[in-house]
Image 1: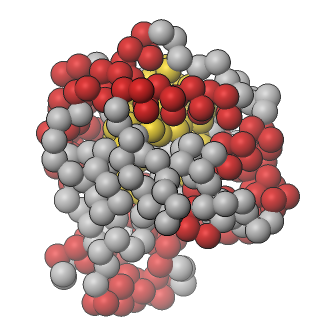
Image 2: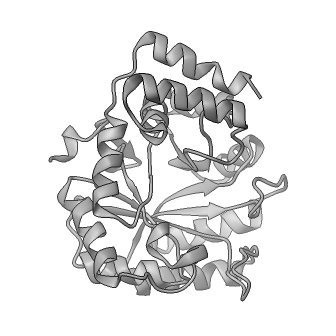
Length: 291
């Protein structure tokens, strides 16, 4: 399968051409995104299969494991194909309980960027997202000091492009007032559409929106059953329907569904290619209204 034949085609992040269907590597770590995978060779196989299938956008973070997923990516794929672009994020640590405490002081961010460079085995990081908020979601507040730190590292040639994650619309605008962003990575799905206006604004600006948690994160039992009904009518899984809907929501939507299984990776790609009729889309668009 070629990159251009993946569901959704291609998108440009700054000067980087990527597949709109990408791969999120978080699930390659152990339970709770802590520790090594149960199947080390299986994790390497998933990464290699993603590239073999034409995916050119892999999402990761140093806190996955921590550090383990980045090292798996390097072991599986280094030296990287010129067409492959790895997106990472900074702004959090892991604690002994598996929590995600913020780590956005300038010295913490510099350390994380250098750790990502070393673990991934690159001289320049393609794209670094500044992770804001906390494990519960977005938190209002200025990002200036943290974002300016990443801009300094970008000016030093260590980062090619910047983005933000878990960000409010106001934080996105603040980042843009300091230096360009090429993507926003927030929670968004059929049942959680607080970012509808932001997505449309970013689309007008040619900036990517990368949703995480395509299922969950706020689905009520009624919404779950409504999605299941559409999926049953189409002879598909709820995840397939959710991924397909996301791709069709806006042309700037990039998907990064994760899995630790080669078979599931293939299923996700096939699911995102699912054709949705006008009636299907109308039924799905009603789901968010039925809270």
